Length: 316
Image (cartoon, rainbow, N blue to C red):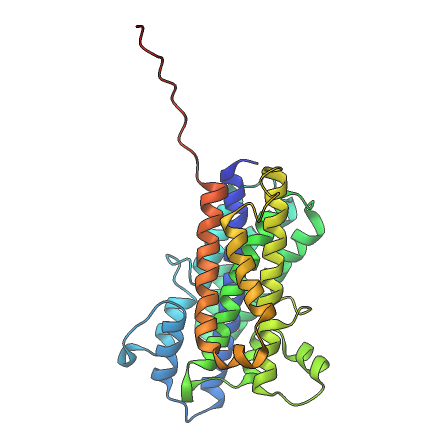
């Protein structure tokens, strides 16, 4: 596969997942501000912007600034609108390997964004967040239903998995690091779609340690950090088997696989009490893991090599 197409697929997976998870985080944030009149809005907004990589001074932080930066900023791939626009642009360059249904879904989503922005500003942002979650689920559902499990699908799911590691870690950080302005664990579970699976698993009220454990370590819930790392590792192993058939006889074939495997092993073999005791540091480490693995994937699969120039020997 051409590195250009592979890179487009990887970033489609990342951008669609980023839009989905950002919508979930913002939905919880705005819901908290409505339900809790005693919350310090500027502090909560400043904490959220810092966790999402867009820090501003606390006096300048408010809900309008949060939505402008993380929802409506078309020029930023970290915002919902920017990420979905970037996903659609990448899809234009990979149409020969995407199914027509996936392209149509991304294109329809992109074309509907101006109307959704107008409705969000007039009636509140929750309709936009619901729209983004539904359209993101449609894109990945169509990918599962209409794409062969070849390199195209592997790069798409690899991008989604690495982004999910990063964003689930950020969702947990909104609870762990925000102090008095932190959302409840119930809201955190709802934002990740984990509330009902958590209740079916533990059959009791929401407990902070169990909620963190579920979102970090559960092997069966697809948005948990462990499940996402495991999926990314499986994609990398398959991609490396198909491209470097003899290089994996010892160890692993690529740096990205090593980075992801090390993070997965840390979660798998560290005792749960130790993990929870060091949770802020571990969440920050997982975000760095996602960034480092993405850079290693880019270097391994997407960076074009300079053409080799043969210099003829001079006649003696």
